[in-house]
Length: 521
Image (cartoon, rainbow, N blue to C red; front, side, top):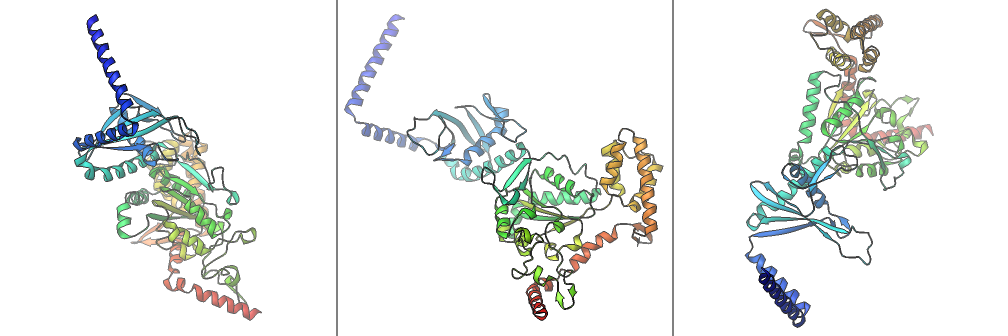
Protein backbone atom coordinates (compact mmCIF):
# COMPACT_ATOMS: atom_id res chain seq x y z
CA UNK A 1 0.00 0.00 0.00
CA UNK A 2 2.85 2.32 0.83
CA UNK A 3 4.43 1.64 -2.55
CA UNK A 4 1.14 2.57 -4.27
CA UNK A 5 0.97 5.99 -2.66
CA UNK A 6 4.66 6.55 -3.40
CA UNK A 7 4.20 5.80 -7.11
CA UNK A 8 1.08 8.01 -7.26
CA UNK A 9 2.96 10.90 -5.71
CA UNK A 10 5.74 10.44 -8.26
CA UNK A 11 3.26 10.55 -11.17
CA UNK A 12 1.64 13.71 -9.82
CA UNK A 13 5.04 15.28 -9.40
CA UNK A 14 6.00 14.50 -12.99
CA UNK A 15 2.67 15.91 -14.22
CA UNK A 16 3.18 19.12 -12.22
CA UNK A 17 6.71 19.40 -13.65
CA UNK A 18 5.52 19.14 -17.25
CA UNK A 19 2.64 21.58 -16.53
CA UNK A 20 5.17 24.11 -15.22
CA UNK A 21 7.29 23.66 -18.32
CA UNK A 22 4.24 24.11 -20.61
CA UNK A 23 3.23 27.31 -18.80
CA UNK A 24 6.79 28.59 -19.10
CA UNK A 25 7.31 27.67 -22.75
CA UNK A 26 3.85 28.46 -24.12
CA UNK A 27 2.60 32.04 -23.63
CA UNK A 28 -0.94 32.71 -22.28
CA UNK A 29 -2.19 33.76 -25.73
CA UNK A 30 -1.22 30.40 -27.20
CA UNK A 31 -2.79 28.50 -24.31
CA UNK A 32 -6.02 30.51 -24.74
CA UNK A 33 -6.07 29.79 -28.48
CA UNK A 34 -5.47 26.10 -27.82
CA UNK A 35 -8.34 25.97 -25.31
CA UNK A 36 -10.63 27.80 -27.76
CA UNK A 37 -9.71 25.35 -30.52
CA UNK A 38 -10.33 22.42 -28.20
CA UNK A 39 -13.80 23.78 -27.34
CA UNK A 40 -14.65 24.18 -31.03
CA UNK A 41 -13.59 20.62 -31.74
CA UNK A 42 -15.59 19.42 -28.76
CA UNK A 43 -18.69 21.33 -29.93
CA UNK A 44 -18.35 19.93 -33.44
CA UNK A 45 -18.42 16.36 -32.21
CA UNK A 46 -20.92 17.01 -29.40
CA UNK A 47 -24.61 16.35 -30.08
CA UNK A 48 -25.73 19.07 -27.61
CA UNK A 49 -25.84 22.85 -27.68
CA UNK A 50 -25.79 25.08 -24.61
CA UNK A 51 -27.46 28.41 -23.79
CA UNK A 52 -26.48 30.63 -20.89
CA UNK A 53 -29.18 32.77 -19.20
CA UNK A 54 -27.55 35.07 -16.65
CA UNK A 55 -29.37 36.84 -13.83
CA UNK A 56 -28.01 40.26 -14.77
CA UNK A 57 -27.58 41.40 -18.36
CA UNK A 58 -25.04 44.19 -18.17
CA UNK A 59 -26.54 46.36 -15.43
CA UNK A 60 -30.18 45.35 -15.94
CA UNK A 61 -32.05 42.36 -14.54
CA UNK A 62 -32.65 39.64 -17.11
CA UNK A 63 -36.41 39.09 -17.35
CA UNK A 64 -35.89 35.65 -18.91
CA UNK A 65 -33.90 34.50 -15.86
CA UNK A 66 -36.78 35.38 -13.54
CA UNK A 67 -39.25 33.68 -15.88
CA UNK A 68 -37.20 30.46 -16.00
CA UNK A 69 -36.89 30.50 -12.21
CA UNK A 70 -40.65 30.78 -11.80
CA UNK A 71 -41.39 28.23 -14.51
CA UNK A 72 -39.10 25.60 -13.02
CA UNK A 73 -40.70 26.15 -9.61
CA UNK A 74 -43.89 24.51 -10.91
CA UNK A 75 -42.16 21.18 -11.55
CA UNK A 76 -39.18 21.32 -9.18
CA UNK A 77 -41.45 21.01 -6.14
CA UNK A 78 -42.45 17.53 -7.38
CA UNK A 79 -39.28 16.12 -8.97
CA UNK A 80 -36.44 17.93 -7.24
CA UNK A 81 -34.47 16.53 -4.31
CA UNK A 82 -32.68 19.69 -3.17
CA UNK A 83 -34.82 22.80 -3.33
CA UNK A 84 -34.73 26.46 -2.34
CA UNK A 85 -37.80 28.15 -0.87
CA UNK A 86 -38.75 31.81 -1.40
CA UNK A 87 -41.73 34.04 -0.76
CA UNK A 88 -42.04 37.22 -2.80
CA UNK A 89 -43.39 40.56 -1.64
CA UNK A 90 -47.21 40.79 -1.81
CA UNK A 91 -47.37 37.03 -2.25
CA UNK A 92 -49.44 34.55 -0.25
CA UNK A 93 -47.66 31.45 -1.58
CA UNK A 94 -44.22 29.88 -1.22
CA UNK A 95 -42.15 29.32 -4.35
CA UNK A 96 -39.86 26.33 -4.88
CA UNK A 97 -36.71 26.64 -6.92
CA UNK A 98 -33.56 24.82 -7.97
CA UNK A 99 -30.79 24.85 -5.39
CA UNK A 100 -27.35 26.14 -6.30
CA UNK A 101 -25.59 24.08 -9.01
CA UNK A 102 -28.43 21.57 -9.20
CA UNK A 103 -30.08 20.39 -12.43
CA UNK A 104 -33.45 19.13 -13.63
CA UNK A 105 -34.83 17.59 -16.84
CA UNK A 106 -37.92 19.22 -18.36
CA UNK A 107 -39.99 17.84 -21.25
CA UNK A 108 -41.70 20.03 -23.85
CA UNK A 109 -43.54 18.58 -26.87
CA UNK A 110 -41.84 15.24 -26.27
CA UNK A 111 -38.32 16.76 -26.29
CA UNK A 112 -36.07 16.78 -23.23
CA UNK A 113 -34.34 19.95 -22.03
CA UNK A 114 -31.80 19.95 -19.19
CA UNK A 115 -31.68 22.99 -16.90
CA UNK A 116 -28.78 23.62 -14.55
CA UNK A 117 -28.66 26.41 -11.99
CA UNK A 118 -25.06 27.69 -11.99
CA UNK A 119 -23.83 29.83 -9.10
CA UNK A 120 -20.22 31.10 -8.98
CA UNK A 121 -18.36 33.77 -7.05
CA UNK A 122 -18.04 37.08 -8.86
CA UNK A 123 -14.59 38.60 -9.32
CA UNK A 124 -13.78 41.64 -7.22
CA UNK A 125 -15.02 44.86 -8.77
CA UNK A 126 -13.02 48.01 -9.07
CA UNK A 127 -15.81 50.34 -10.21
CA UNK A 128 -19.46 49.92 -11.13
CA UNK A 129 -22.37 52.27 -11.65
CA UNK A 130 -24.58 49.75 -9.92
CA UNK A 131 -23.49 47.45 -7.07
CA UNK A 132 -23.61 43.83 -8.18
CA UNK A 133 -24.18 40.80 -5.92
CA UNK A 134 -21.20 38.78 -4.79
CA UNK A 135 -22.53 35.68 -6.52
CA UNK A 136 -23.01 35.31 -10.26
CA UNK A 137 -26.17 33.36 -10.97
CA UNK A 138 -27.54 31.91 -14.17
CA UNK A 139 -29.25 28.99 -15.86
CA UNK A 140 -27.68 26.74 -18.48
CA UNK A 141 -30.05 25.15 -20.98
CA UNK A 142 -28.80 22.01 -22.73
CA UNK A 143 -30.73 20.61 -25.68
CA UNK A 144 -29.84 18.42 -28.63
CA UNK A 145 -28.76 20.21 -31.78
CA UNK A 146 -31.36 18.46 -33.88
CA UNK A 147 -34.11 19.86 -31.61
CA UNK A 148 -32.83 23.45 -31.62
CA UNK A 149 -35.15 24.87 -34.28
CA UNK A 150 -38.08 22.78 -33.12
CA UNK A 151 -37.77 23.62 -29.45
CA UNK A 152 -36.06 26.89 -28.75
CA UNK A 153 -38.41 29.71 -29.80
CA UNK A 154 -41.72 28.06 -28.88
CA UNK A 155 -40.26 26.70 -25.65
CA UNK A 156 -39.04 30.09 -24.43
CA UNK A 157 -42.36 31.73 -25.32
CA UNK A 158 -44.15 29.01 -23.39
CA UNK A 159 -41.88 29.61 -20.38
CA UNK A 160 -42.59 33.37 -20.40
CA UNK A 161 -46.35 32.80 -20.57
CA UNK A 162 -46.31 30.12 -17.88
CA UNK A 163 -44.20 32.28 -15.58
CA UNK A 164 -46.61 35.17 -15.99
CA UNK A 165 -49.51 32.94 -14.94
CA UNK A 166 -47.59 31.61 -11.92
CA UNK A 167 -46.61 35.14 -10.87
CA UNK A 168 -50.19 36.32 -11.07
CA UNK A 169 -51.53 33.35 -9.08
CA UNK A 170 -48.89 33.63 -6.36
CA UNK A 171 -49.13 37.38 -6.00
CA UNK A 172 -51.92 38.99 -4.03
CA UNK A 173 -54.27 41.25 -5.96
CA UNK A 174 -53.51 44.96 -5.73
CA UNK A 175 -55.88 47.91 -5.72
CA UNK A 176 -54.38 51.01 -7.33
CA UNK A 177 -55.51 54.62 -7.21
CA UNK A 178 -53.99 57.62 -8.96
CA UNK A 179 -51.92 59.85 -6.71
CA UNK A 180 -53.51 63.03 -5.42
CA UNK A 181 -52.96 65.96 -7.75
CA UNK A 182 -51.03 63.82 -10.23
CA UNK A 183 -47.97 63.52 -7.96
CA UNK A 184 -45.51 60.63 -8.25
CA UNK A 185 -44.55 58.16 -5.55
CA UNK A 186 -40.99 57.36 -4.45
CA UNK A 187 -40.47 55.12 -7.51
CA UNK A 188 -41.77 57.72 -9.94
CA UNK A 189 -45.12 55.98 -10.49
CA UNK A 190 -48.42 57.89 -10.64
CA UNK A 191 -50.33 55.01 -9.00
CA UNK A 192 -50.46 54.11 -5.31
CA UNK A 193 -51.40 50.56 -4.34
CA UNK A 194 -52.71 48.55 -1.39
CA UNK A 195 -53.42 44.80 -1.17
CA UNK A 196 -56.85 43.93 -2.55
CA UNK A 197 -58.66 41.65 -0.09
CA UNK A 198 -62.28 41.99 -1.18
CA UNK A 199 -63.99 38.58 -0.69
CA UNK A 200 -66.73 39.04 -3.29
CA UNK A 201 -67.16 36.21 -5.80
CA UNK A 202 -69.79 35.33 -8.36
CA UNK A 203 -71.08 32.65 -5.99
CA UNK A 204 -71.85 35.21 -3.28
CA UNK A 205 -73.09 37.91 -5.66
CA UNK A 206 -76.84 38.54 -5.26
CA UNK A 207 -77.93 38.40 -8.88
CA UNK A 208 -79.99 36.33 -11.26
CA UNK A 209 -78.03 33.08 -11.91
CA UNK A 210 -78.61 33.20 -15.66
CA UNK A 211 -77.26 36.75 -15.88
CA UNK A 212 -74.22 35.77 -13.78
CA UNK A 213 -73.57 32.81 -16.05
CA UNK A 214 -73.67 35.08 -19.08
CA UNK A 215 -71.15 37.48 -17.51
CA UNK A 216 -68.81 34.68 -16.42
CA UNK A 217 -68.81 33.14 -19.90
CA UNK A 218 -68.09 36.54 -21.44
CA UNK A 219 -65.14 37.05 -19.07
CA UNK A 220 -63.78 33.58 -19.86
CA UNK A 221 -64.04 34.21 -23.59
CA UNK A 222 -62.16 37.48 -23.15
CA UNK A 223 -59.36 36.02 -21.02
CA UNK A 224 -58.86 33.13 -23.48
CA UNK A 225 -59.34 35.19 -26.61
CA UNK A 226 -55.86 36.46 -27.42
CA UNK A 227 -55.78 34.60 -30.71
CA UNK A 228 -59.28 35.76 -31.65
CA UNK A 229 -58.54 39.43 -30.98
CA UNK A 230 -55.27 39.21 -32.90
CA UNK A 231 -56.94 37.47 -35.86
CA UNK A 232 -59.74 40.04 -36.09
CA UNK A 233 -57.42 43.03 -35.73
CA UNK A 234 -59.00 44.26 -32.49
CA UNK A 235 -57.24 45.54 -29.40
CA UNK A 236 -57.35 42.96 -26.61
CA UNK A 237 -59.63 44.91 -24.30
CA UNK A 238 -63.28 44.96 -23.31
CA UNK A 239 -65.61 47.48 -21.74
CA UNK A 240 -68.40 46.91 -19.23
CA UNK A 241 -71.01 49.43 -18.09
CA UNK A 242 -72.65 48.70 -14.74
CA UNK A 243 -75.74 50.82 -14.16
CA UNK A 244 -78.67 50.79 -11.80
CA UNK A 245 -79.87 52.20 -8.47
CA UNK A 246 -77.40 52.67 -5.58
CA UNK A 247 -76.84 49.59 -3.43
CA UNK A 248 -77.44 47.02 -6.17
CA UNK A 249 -73.91 45.57 -6.04
CA UNK A 250 -71.93 47.38 -8.73
CA UNK A 251 -68.74 47.56 -6.63
CA UNK A 252 -69.18 43.93 -5.55
CA UNK A 253 -69.49 42.96 -9.21
CA UNK A 254 -66.13 44.62 -9.98
CA UNK A 255 -64.49 42.79 -7.07
CA UNK A 256 -65.98 39.48 -8.23
CA UNK A 257 -64.63 40.08 -11.74
CA UNK A 258 -61.14 40.80 -10.37
CA UNK A 259 -61.15 37.71 -8.14
CA UNK A 260 -62.46 35.51 -10.94
CA UNK A 261 -59.83 36.60 -13.48
CA UNK A 262 -56.99 37.26 -11.01
CA UNK A 263 -56.57 40.84 -12.28
CA UNK A 264 -55.41 43.93 -10.42
CA UNK A 265 -57.79 46.90 -10.16
CA UNK A 266 -56.95 50.49 -11.11
CA UNK A 267 -59.53 52.80 -9.53
CA UNK A 268 -59.27 55.99 -11.57
CA UNK A 269 -60.36 59.17 -9.82
CA UNK A 270 -61.03 61.63 -12.63
CA UNK A 271 -61.25 64.65 -10.36
CA UNK A 272 -57.54 64.22 -9.56
CA UNK A 273 -56.55 64.24 -13.24
CA UNK A 274 -55.77 67.68 -14.64
CA UNK A 275 -55.88 67.17 -18.40
CA UNK A 276 -56.03 64.67 -21.25
CA UNK A 277 -52.25 64.33 -21.39
CA UNK A 278 -52.11 63.26 -17.76
CA UNK A 279 -54.95 60.82 -18.40
CA UNK A 280 -52.93 59.15 -21.17
CA UNK A 281 -49.86 58.91 -18.93
CA UNK A 282 -51.93 57.16 -16.28
CA UNK A 283 -53.14 54.68 -18.89
CA UNK A 284 -49.58 53.97 -20.03
CA UNK A 285 -48.57 53.13 -16.45
CA UNK A 286 -51.25 50.46 -16.03
CA UNK A 287 -50.24 46.84 -16.41
CA UNK A 288 -51.75 44.14 -18.55
CA UNK A 289 -54.28 41.76 -16.97
CA UNK A 290 -55.96 44.59 -15.09
CA UNK A 291 -59.36 46.20 -14.63
CA UNK A 292 -59.53 49.98 -15.00
CA UNK A 293 -62.53 51.33 -13.08
CA UNK A 294 -64.25 54.71 -13.18
CA UNK A 295 -67.06 54.67 -10.63
CA UNK A 296 -70.03 57.05 -10.75
CA UNK A 297 -68.81 58.53 -14.00
CA UNK A 298 -71.86 60.78 -14.23
CA UNK A 299 -70.77 62.49 -10.99
CA UNK A 300 -67.00 62.74 -11.61
CA UNK A 301 -66.91 65.24 -14.47
CA UNK A 302 -69.52 66.64 -16.82
CA UNK A 303 -70.03 63.93 -19.45
CA UNK A 304 -73.75 64.46 -19.86
CA UNK A 305 -75.78 63.61 -22.94
CA UNK A 306 -75.18 66.32 -25.52
CA UNK A 307 -78.84 66.30 -26.62
CA UNK A 308 -80.06 66.75 -23.08
CA UNK A 309 -77.69 69.68 -22.63
CA UNK A 310 -79.13 71.64 -25.57
CA UNK A 311 -81.63 73.48 -23.42
CA UNK A 312 -81.80 76.99 -24.74
CA UNK A 313 -82.45 80.01 -22.58
CA UNK A 314 -83.85 82.63 -24.96
CA UNK A 315 -81.63 82.27 -28.00
CA UNK A 316 -78.54 81.06 -26.06
CA UNK A 317 -77.51 77.41 -26.18
CA UNK A 318 -76.33 76.37 -22.71
CA UNK A 319 -73.72 73.98 -24.07
CA UNK A 320 -72.18 76.43 -26.53
CA UNK A 321 -69.44 77.72 -24.24
CA UNK A 322 -69.35 75.26 -21.36
CA UNK A 323 -68.89 72.08 -23.38
CA UNK A 324 -67.23 72.92 -26.69
CA UNK A 325 -64.35 75.27 -26.01
CA UNK A 326 -61.50 72.98 -26.98
CA UNK A 327 -62.58 71.99 -30.47
CA UNK A 328 -64.79 69.33 -31.95
CA UNK A 329 -66.35 67.05 -29.38
CA UNK A 330 -64.20 68.23 -26.47
CA UNK A 331 -66.33 68.68 -23.40
CA UNK A 332 -64.79 70.37 -20.39
CA UNK A 333 -65.28 68.92 -16.94
CA UNK A 334 -67.11 70.59 -14.12
CA UNK A 335 -63.84 70.90 -12.21
CA UNK A 336 -62.40 73.30 -14.75
CA UNK A 337 -62.07 76.07 -12.20
CA UNK A 338 -59.82 73.74 -10.17
CA UNK A 339 -57.50 73.08 -13.11
CA UNK A 340 -59.34 69.99 -14.38
CA UNK A 341 -59.71 70.19 -18.15
CA UNK A 342 -60.48 66.59 -19.12
CA UNK A 343 -62.61 66.52 -22.24
CA UNK A 344 -65.08 64.04 -23.63
CA UNK A 345 -62.84 63.31 -26.59
CA UNK A 346 -59.94 62.69 -24.19
CA UNK A 347 -61.95 60.12 -22.28
CA UNK A 348 -63.15 58.48 -25.50
CA UNK A 349 -59.54 58.17 -26.70
CA UNK A 350 -58.64 56.77 -23.28
CA UNK A 351 -61.13 53.91 -23.69
CA UNK A 352 -61.20 53.35 -27.44
CA UNK A 353 -58.47 55.38 -29.13
CA UNK A 354 -54.91 54.57 -30.17
CA UNK A 355 -53.66 55.10 -26.64
CA UNK A 356 -55.98 52.42 -25.30
CA UNK A 357 -53.95 49.85 -27.26
CA UNK A 358 -50.64 50.53 -25.48
CA UNK A 359 -51.29 47.45 -23.31
CA UNK A 360 -53.17 44.19 -23.67
CA UNK A 361 -55.75 42.11 -21.80
CA UNK A 362 -57.36 45.02 -20.00
CA UNK A 363 -60.95 45.62 -18.99
CA UNK A 364 -62.59 49.03 -18.65
CA UNK A 365 -65.51 49.23 -16.21
CA UNK A 366 -67.72 52.30 -15.82
CA UNK A 367 -70.46 52.53 -13.20
CA UNK A 368 -73.36 54.96 -13.01
CA UNK A 369 -76.68 55.35 -11.26
CA UNK A 370 -78.19 57.33 -14.15
CA UNK A 371 -77.37 55.95 -17.57
CA UNK A 372 -79.61 58.49 -19.27
CA UNK A 373 -77.26 61.26 -18.15
CA UNK A 374 -74.26 59.84 -20.04
CA UNK A 375 -73.38 60.93 -23.54
CA UNK A 376 -74.30 58.17 -26.05
CA UNK A 377 -70.77 58.26 -27.46
CA UNK A 378 -69.60 56.56 -24.25
CA UNK A 379 -72.20 53.80 -24.52
CA UNK A 380 -71.56 52.37 -27.95
CA UNK A 381 -69.85 49.03 -28.60
CA UNK A 382 -66.08 49.23 -28.67
CA UNK A 383 -66.13 51.45 -25.60
CA UNK A 384 -68.74 49.81 -23.40
CA UNK A 385 -69.26 46.43 -25.05
CA UNK A 386 -71.53 44.89 -22.43
CA UNK A 387 -74.20 46.80 -20.50
CA UNK A 388 -75.13 45.14 -17.21
CA UNK A 389 -78.25 46.37 -15.44
CA UNK A 390 -77.89 45.95 -11.67
CA UNK A 391 -81.54 45.78 -10.63
CA UNK A 392 -83.42 45.67 -7.36
CA UNK A 393 -83.42 42.38 -5.51
CA UNK A 394 -85.31 39.58 -7.27
CA UNK A 395 -86.42 36.29 -5.78
CA UNK A 396 -83.33 34.54 -7.22
CA UNK A 397 -81.04 37.15 -5.65
CA UNK A 398 -82.96 36.95 -2.38
CA UNK A 399 -82.38 33.20 -2.17
CA UNK A 400 -78.64 33.80 -2.56
CA UNK A 401 -78.69 36.40 0.24
CA UNK A 402 -80.61 34.08 2.55
CA UNK A 403 -78.03 31.38 1.91
CA UNK A 404 -75.07 33.73 2.38
CA UNK A 405 -76.22 35.39 5.61
CA UNK A 406 -78.43 32.79 7.28
CA UNK A 407 -77.36 29.54 5.67
CA UNK A 408 -80.95 28.89 4.59
CA UNK A 409 -81.30 26.32 1.84
CA UNK A 410 -84.36 26.27 -0.39
CA UNK A 411 -86.71 23.46 0.53
CA UNK A 412 -84.79 22.67 3.75
CA UNK A 413 -84.74 25.68 6.06
CA UNK A 414 -87.50 27.68 4.32
CA UNK A 415 -91.13 26.59 4.22
CA UNK A 416 -92.78 26.68 0.84
CA UNK A 417 -95.45 29.03 2.18
CA UNK A 418 -92.87 31.53 3.44
CA UNK A 419 -90.93 31.32 0.21
CA UNK A 420 -94.11 31.91 -1.77
CA UNK A 421 -94.92 35.01 0.30
CA UNK A 422 -91.42 36.37 -0.27
CA UNK A 423 -91.73 35.76 -3.98
CA UNK A 424 -95.02 37.64 -4.13
CA UNK A 425 -93.74 40.85 -2.52
CA UNK A 426 -90.00 41.05 -3.31
CA UNK A 427 -90.52 42.38 -6.84
CA UNK A 428 -93.03 45.02 -5.74
CA UNK A 429 -90.92 46.09 -2.74
CA UNK A 430 -88.05 47.24 -4.97
CA UNK A 431 -85.42 46.86 -2.25
CA UNK A 432 -81.75 46.73 -3.10
CA UNK A 433 -79.52 43.82 -2.06
CA UNK A 434 -77.72 46.22 0.29
CA UNK A 435 -80.97 47.05 2.15
CA UNK A 436 -81.97 43.40 2.45
CA UNK A 437 -78.47 42.42 3.60
CA UNK A 438 -78.65 44.92 6.43
CA UNK A 439 -81.89 43.37 7.70
CA UNK A 440 -80.36 39.88 7.59
CA UNK A 441 -77.12 40.95 9.27
CA UNK A 442 -78.93 42.36 12.30
CA UNK A 443 -80.68 39.03 12.94
CA UNK A 444 -78.18 36.58 11.50
CA UNK A 445 -78.12 34.52 14.73
CA UNK A 446 -81.91 34.05 14.66
CA UNK A 447 -82.96 32.71 11.28
CA UNK A 448 -86.71 32.66 11.84
CA UNK A 449 -86.76 36.20 13.26
CA UNK A 450 -84.64 37.45 10.36
CA UNK A 451 -86.97 35.95 7.75
CA UNK A 452 -90.12 37.18 9.52
CA UNK A 453 -88.77 40.72 9.90
CA UNK A 454 -87.64 40.78 6.28
CA UNK A 455 -91.03 39.60 5.11
CA UNK A 456 -92.78 42.36 7.08
CA UNK A 457 -90.47 45.04 5.68
CA UNK A 458 -90.98 43.77 2.13
CA UNK A 459 -94.76 43.86 2.58
CA UNK A 460 -94.66 47.44 3.89
CA UNK A 461 -92.47 48.56 1.00
CA UNK A 462 -94.64 46.78 -1.54
CA UNK A 463 -97.84 48.38 -0.20
CA UNK A 464 -96.27 51.83 -0.18
CA UNK A 465 -95.00 51.46 -3.74
CA UNK A 466 -98.39 50.22 -4.89
CA UNK A 467 -100.09 53.29 -3.39
CA UNK A 468 -97.54 55.67 -4.92
CA UNK A 469 -97.82 53.98 -8.29
CA UNK A 470 -94.04 53.60 -8.56
CA UNK A 471 -94.18 49.99 -9.70
CA UNK A 472 -94.47 49.54 -13.44
CA UNK A 473 -96.61 46.60 -14.54
CA UNK A 474 -96.52 44.94 -17.88
CA UNK A 475 -98.39 42.10 -19.50
CA UNK A 476 -96.39 39.13 -20.72
CA UNK A 477 -98.55 36.60 -22.59
CA UNK A 478 -101.55 37.60 -20.55
CA UNK A 479 -99.73 37.27 -17.21
CA UNK A 480 -98.94 40.38 -15.14
CA UNK A 481 -95.23 40.63 -14.43
CA UNK A 482 -93.84 43.35 -12.14
CA UNK A 483 -90.40 44.35 -13.30
CA UNK A 484 -87.93 47.22 -13.38
CA UNK A 485 -89.07 48.29 -16.81
CA UNK A 486 -88.67 51.97 -16.11
CA UNK A 487 -84.99 51.61 -15.18
CA UNK A 488 -84.22 49.32 -18.12
CA UNK A 489 -85.92 51.73 -20.52
CA UNK A 490 -83.35 54.38 -19.56
CA UNK A 491 -80.65 52.48 -21.44
CA UNK A 492 -82.87 52.02 -24.46
CA UNK A 493 -83.61 55.73 -24.65
CA UNK A 494 -79.92 56.58 -24.26
CA UNK A 495 -78.86 54.15 -26.98
CA UNK A 496 -81.64 55.22 -29.34
CA UNK A 497 -80.29 58.76 -29.23
CA UNK A 498 -76.82 57.56 -30.28
CA UNK A 499 -77.20 57.62 -34.04
CA UNK A 500 -74.27 57.94 -36.46
CA UNK A 501 -75.70 61.27 -37.49
CA UNK A 502 -75.34 62.68 -34.00
CA UNK A 503 -71.64 61.93 -33.65
CA UNK A 504 -71.00 63.37 -37.09
CA UNK A 505 -72.85 66.54 -36.13
CA UNK A 506 -70.56 67.48 -33.27
CA UNK A 507 -68.80 70.05 -35.39
CA UNK A 508 -72.16 71.49 -36.53
CA UNK A 509 -73.19 71.78 -32.90
CA UNK A 510 -70.06 73.78 -32.18
CA UNK A 511 -70.86 76.12 -35.05
CA UNK A 512 -74.43 76.55 -33.86
CA UNK A 513 -73.22 77.44 -30.38
CA UNK A 514 -70.80 80.02 -31.76
CA UNK A 515 -73.51 81.62 -33.93
CA UNK A 516 -75.90 81.86 -31.00
CA UNK A 517 -73.21 83.49 -28.88
CA UNK A 518 -72.70 86.07 -31.62
CA UNK A 519 -76.41 86.87 -31.54
CA UNK A 520 -76.24 87.57 -27.82
CA UNK A 521 -73.32 89.91 -28.37
